[in-house]
Image (cartoon, rainbow, N blue to C red; front, side):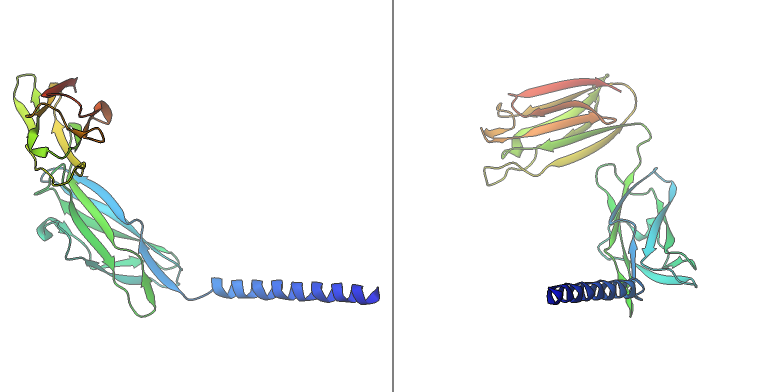
Length: 252
């Protein structure tokens, strides 16, 4: 009986030893000099008024604090599509003493932008000895719309060459249009096409057409679609099972 009690006491002693040792190891890991810096996010979207200049703050975080300020090198990737003349990125970013957060201020000019297709500025923090850096950050830059934003998401069936569309104002003037598009070799839906328009107040009519007369339908399992929205409100979100055309009138 005494032997059993002694055995239990010995097991308990060993368990407490492991717990104490584990805590000591955890504390040692917490105070590790591991140095890591990263951007606040991988993707940031901004909009700039035509011809205007916009200042955008990008936060940079560090895994630890220091009693002195630290400066890190910032590089713009060659894959960026924003014209260099239309943006300014500082060569470095500084994290102040006793802080783990710094701010990089980027300046962009609203030249050569569009509503639908973003220009990109791809940023990297440059690694150094003993410094680990996070993923690149992509800033998507588009033209800002100060009026009404209308979006069209279009998914075509196989026969894109049959499809066209337009938006007309109350005076029957075309303010936006698209198509015909290309056909594909396989019996499948095409990748989505996304469009953004900036329109003043008024009444408009969106019309989508199919020259063959079977809509955006290749088969029972391959049916295209379109989603039309104005200022975030859905006007039409429908499959392409019309014949020669279909229209939707909306007011902004």
